[in-house]
Image 1 (tube, one colour):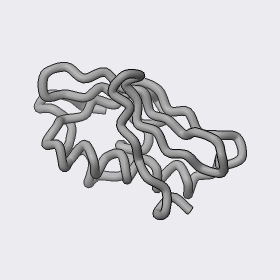
Image 2 (cartoon, rainbow, N blue to C red; image 1 turned 90 degrees about the vertical axis):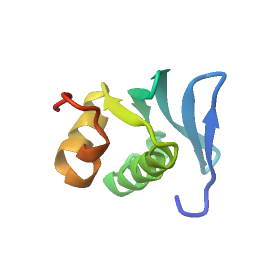
Image 3 (cartoon, rainbow, N blue to C red; image 1 turned 180 degrees about the horizontal axis):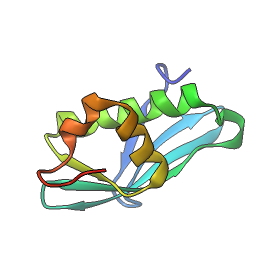
Image 4 (cartoon, one colour; image 1 turned 180 degrees about the vertical axis):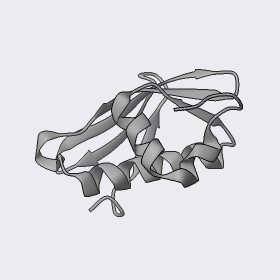
Amino acid sequence: MVETAELIDNDFLRQFELKVDNELATIEYSLQERKIFLTKLVIPSNSNNETFKKEFLEIVFEQIRERNLSMVPTSPEIAKFVRSNRKYKRMLPVGVRI
């Protein structure tokens, strides 16, 4: 389901968007220098399962990695995901621990 959807970086609203079943999953962010602060995760109620959330976050993290940015997850849900997936901890800026 997520693989076929297209991730959109909405610069105006400062959020990543993924349309699923006519509903929008979003991750709001703030970009400062070479760091992206992930501030809020919104998952549609009809897609509120862990598999969807995992795939959505992985797609967003891959796009952040391709842009060569460091990420700072300030959303508790996103921070929890990063804590449980060691490979994404490398994307944190130097000195930031979660």
